Length: 95
Image 1 (cartoon, one colour):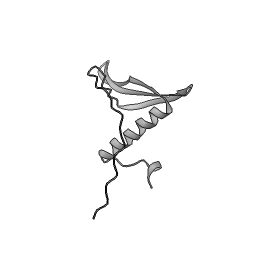
Image 2 (cartoon, rainbow, N blue to C red):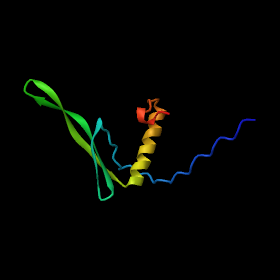
Image 3 (cartoon, rainbow, N blue to C red):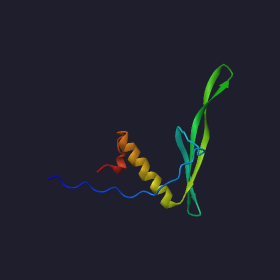
Image 4 (cartoon, rainbow, N blue to C red):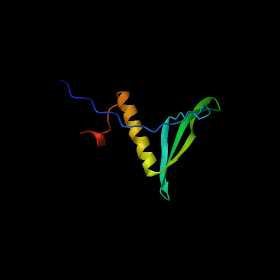
Protein backbone atom coordinates (compact mmCIF):
# COMPACT_ATOMS: atom_id res chain seq x y z
CA UNK A 1 0.00 0.00 0.00
CA UNK A 2 1.36 3.43 -0.96
CA UNK A 3 1.94 5.90 1.86
CA UNK A 4 -0.53 8.74 2.21
CA UNK A 5 0.70 11.92 0.47
CA UNK A 6 1.34 14.87 2.79
CA UNK A 7 -1.54 17.27 3.18
CA UNK A 8 -0.90 20.69 1.66
CA UNK A 9 -0.38 23.55 4.06
CA UNK A 10 -3.38 25.78 4.48
CA UNK A 11 -3.19 29.00 2.50
CA UNK A 12 -4.84 32.22 3.59
CA UNK A 13 -7.78 33.18 1.44
CA UNK A 14 -7.16 36.31 -0.62
CA UNK A 15 -10.01 38.38 -2.02
CA UNK A 16 -9.91 39.05 -5.75
CA UNK A 17 -9.34 42.55 -7.08
CA UNK A 18 -9.75 43.11 -10.81
CA UNK A 19 -8.04 46.50 -10.46
CA UNK A 20 -4.80 45.04 -9.04
CA UNK A 21 -1.92 45.71 -11.44
CA UNK A 22 -0.04 43.00 -13.29
CA UNK A 23 3.65 43.75 -12.99
CA UNK A 24 5.95 42.65 -15.80
CA UNK A 25 9.69 43.15 -15.50
CA UNK A 26 12.82 42.17 -17.37
CA UNK A 27 15.07 42.22 -14.33
CA UNK A 28 15.58 43.15 -10.72
CA UNK A 29 18.11 45.96 -10.58
CA UNK A 30 18.46 47.19 -7.03
CA UNK A 31 17.71 46.16 -3.47
CA UNK A 32 18.10 47.51 0.01
CA UNK A 33 16.70 47.67 3.51
CA UNK A 34 15.53 50.58 5.61
CA UNK A 35 14.18 50.30 9.15
CA UNK A 36 13.33 46.61 8.74
CA UNK A 37 11.57 47.08 5.40
CA UNK A 38 13.19 45.29 2.47
CA UNK A 39 13.19 46.98 -0.93
CA UNK A 40 13.53 45.55 -4.44
CA UNK A 41 13.38 47.62 -7.62
CA UNK A 42 12.33 45.88 -10.83
CA UNK A 43 12.53 47.35 -14.32
CA UNK A 44 11.52 46.65 -17.87
CA UNK A 45 13.23 47.70 -21.07
CA UNK A 46 11.65 50.36 -23.22
CA UNK A 47 12.71 51.25 -26.74
CA UNK A 48 13.81 54.83 -27.29
CA UNK A 49 14.56 56.26 -30.75
CA UNK A 50 18.00 57.88 -30.81
CA UNK A 51 19.30 59.54 -33.96
CA UNK A 52 19.19 56.75 -36.58
CA UNK A 53 19.06 53.91 -34.01
CA UNK A 54 16.78 52.52 -31.36
CA UNK A 55 18.17 51.99 -27.88
CA UNK A 56 16.80 49.97 -25.02
CA UNK A 57 16.49 51.92 -21.77
CA UNK A 58 15.54 50.24 -18.47
CA UNK A 59 12.62 51.94 -16.73
CA UNK A 60 11.45 51.10 -13.22
CA UNK A 61 8.30 48.93 -13.33
CA UNK A 62 7.70 48.62 -9.60
CA UNK A 63 9.10 49.33 -6.16
CA UNK A 64 8.55 46.18 -4.09
CA UNK A 65 8.50 46.79 -0.33
CA UNK A 66 7.88 44.28 2.43
CA UNK A 67 8.85 42.88 5.79
CA UNK A 68 11.39 40.07 6.09
CA UNK A 69 8.48 37.63 6.54
CA UNK A 70 6.67 38.91 3.44
CA UNK A 71 9.81 38.83 1.27
CA UNK A 72 10.63 35.32 2.53
CA UNK A 73 7.14 34.18 1.52
CA UNK A 74 7.57 35.83 -1.89
CA UNK A 75 10.95 34.12 -2.37
CA UNK A 76 9.43 30.73 -1.45
CA UNK A 77 6.63 31.19 -3.99
CA UNK A 78 9.08 32.29 -6.68
CA UNK A 79 11.19 29.18 -5.97
CA UNK A 80 8.08 27.00 -6.37
CA UNK A 81 7.07 28.75 -9.61
CA UNK A 82 10.60 28.26 -10.99
CA UNK A 83 10.47 24.57 -10.06
CA UNK A 84 7.14 24.25 -11.93
CA UNK A 85 8.79 25.78 -14.99
CA UNK A 86 11.69 23.33 -14.77
CA UNK A 87 14.25 26.03 -14.04
CA UNK A 88 17.52 24.73 -12.58
CA UNK A 89 18.29 25.58 -8.97
CA UNK A 90 21.03 28.17 -8.41
CA UNK A 91 24.38 26.69 -7.34
CA UNK A 92 23.80 27.98 -3.79
CA UNK A 93 20.62 25.86 -3.47
CA UNK A 94 21.88 22.56 -4.92
CA UNK A 95 22.16 19.59 -2.56
